[in-house]
Image 1: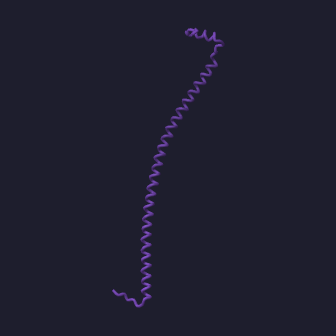
Image 2: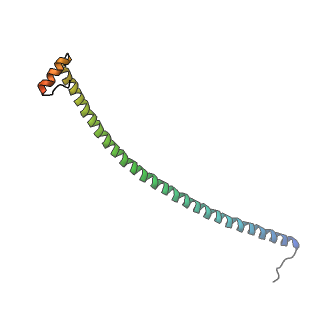
Image 3: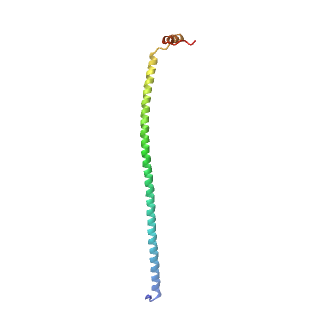
Length: 120
């Protein structure tokens, strides 16, 4: 097939146009490849981020359950501490009200009255 080329100058222009089109085609193909790679990377990053978020949400729910359990335990222990403080306070008041024996002879007499025999 013969091209109607009249001089070599137009042949050079045709060659340059072909080279330009080839470069343009290669750059378009590379651009499409890069866009596809970027999209794949974005998908992978989004998938990993979703996995991390799910893990953190599950962990947060677990920690909330633990927190509730510890709140209940804390409340129970606080109530018990208040109960034992009241008992201790009553014991202290009773101790002040009960007259302690002044001597060991008085103590022995009290034990005899309660039915305990002396040891020595």
